[in-house]
Amino acid sequence: MDYTYLLKYCENESARQKVNAMNEHGSFGKAGTALGITKQSVHRTIKNLIFKASKQGDNPEHDMHHPVPDGYNVKGVSSYYNKDGILTGQWVKSNEDADRKKEQLLERLEAFEWKPAPTIERLPRPLNEDLCTLLTITDFHLGAYCYEKETGDNWDTDIASDEYIMAIKEMCEGSPNSETGILNLQGDFLHWDGLDAVTPTAKHLLDADTRFSRLIDVSLDIIMHSVEIMLNKFQTVKVIVCEGNHDIVGSMWVRKAIKKIYSENDRVEIDDTDFPFYAHLHGEIMLAFHHGHKVKNTKLPELFASEPRYRSMWGNAKYCYIHTGHYHHAEQQMSESGGAIVERHPTLAGRDAYATRGGYNSWRSAHAITYHKKTGEHRRVTVTPKIE
Image (tube, rainbow, N blue to C red):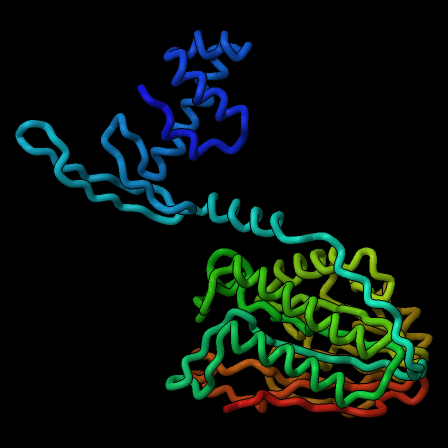
C-alpha cells in the first residue's frame, strides 16, 4: 500500500519518517527496525494518521478521494458503483470539527508576532505634568455587521477599523499636551468571544461579518496603531482593557497580548487586572472603570470605596470619576452624594438588527476627557462617526 497521501497530515518530522519507512519497507516491523524503534510505535502513528485523514474524507483504500477543508469532519460518505464495481460517484457530507476550530484559534494566537513593538523615543517638547487625558472607546463591537437598509447604519470590520483610528487621531489632536494618556477600551470592544458568533452566556445569535481568527488580527493591529498615535502625543500611555459581557475571555487575551507586545517599552503601561473593576490615580483624582454589566451605576461609588484593592486610592483622592458603558448611550450622574461622578459613555458603533428591532437608539460618539491632578475635569473633546 502507498502511504504517501498521509504525508500531508504529518505534524512533525518523526511522523514523516515513519510514513516514508512504511513506503520503503512495506511492514511495521521492517520500518521500525530501519528507524531503530518498535513496530508498535510505527503502527500507532500510521493508524492515527489514517484516522485523521479519514475524518477529512481522504482514504484511498476505501475509495475516499474528496478531502474536506481543514476544520471540518466527514459526517458521511455515499459511494455509487456500477455493475462492474467501479466507483462512478460519491457524495461527501461534512460538519465543523469543534476541536480543530479550537486548535486553529490557538495556532493563530501562537503565530502572531509577539516580538516587542518598536520603542518610540521620548517626546522632545515639554508636556503638562498636571494633566492626564482619557480616551474612551466603549461598546465598539468590532466584528459586528449592520445592514444599512434594515438598521439605518452601515457597519462592518473594515468600517469599524477606519472609524476607530480616525476617532483616536481626532481625540489626540483636540486634546492638550498631557504628560499621560490613557486608552480606555471600556468593554465589548469585540462583538463576540469565541468560535461561534454568539453572546458568551445566553448564546444569543449575533450578526457578524468575519471569522474570529481575523478578528484577532484586526483588533491587535488597530490597538497597536492607536498606541503609536498616542505615544506621539503623550509622554506615557496606559492601556486599560475592560471586561465586557460580549468579550469576557476576549478582553483577557487582548490584555495579555498587548502586555507582551509592549513588554520592553517603558513608555507604555498595561493594566493587567483580572477583575472587572479598574482604577487609576492621577494626583488627587481617581479614575475608575467598569463596563456596567455586573453592577449598576448607582452602586459603583460604594463598590470602589469599599473594594480592598482600591480603598486606599479612594481615601487619597479628592475627586472620583467613574466611567461605564454597556447601554450604548450617554448618561451622567452629576450627584456627588455617593462620593463620585459616574458617567456612562456612548458608543461609536453602528446600530445592529437587535437594537433596531428593540427600538434602542443612541447618539454615536466618543469622548477624550482631560483631567487636572487637583481640580478634576479640565477639557473634553467629542468625536462622532464620519457618515458619508
